Length: 183
Image 1 (cartoon, rainbow, N blue to C red):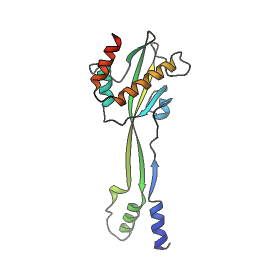
Image 2: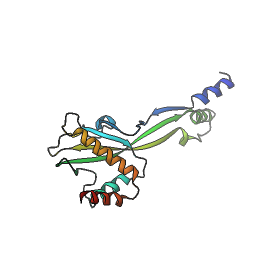
Image 3: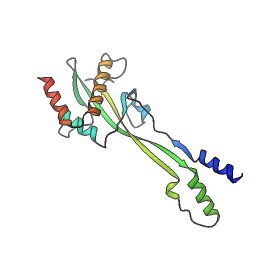
Image 4: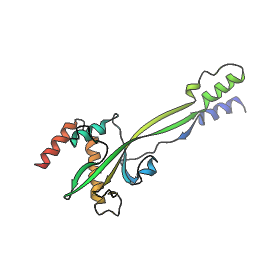
């Protein structure tokens, strides 16, 4: 292959995606286990978390006055005089690419008897964090399943919770709003 064509080839195909993180605009209702096999086999509201690590944990801890006890699992909330529970999971999904130029450079160096110098550049990785919210009723039924009588109301509740989280920087504000609405 002529050098001119080789450089064009390398430029066009220099990074090959090996693994691609999902793109979720807003949020998505889906079976949690399909998003990550480590999650329960029930419906969940999934959205990308643009904030720093543990921000959602701190938000839920403050808003629901959990005192750092069972913050991630079975957080109770009331809808239409019925108690439901939500849990959340923070999951990282990554985009991983193989960078061909450093691989070819190191291969050429090694074939000439030299050591590789670009080992740490053979792949690149960029991660995204997602929050996965599940909900259940008192009998541990999947409350986001479309067959559940309150599925739509619970989905709206969790979507409003997501929006409040994304739009609140001082989590004490959400606690004060909660207290004002209960009076």
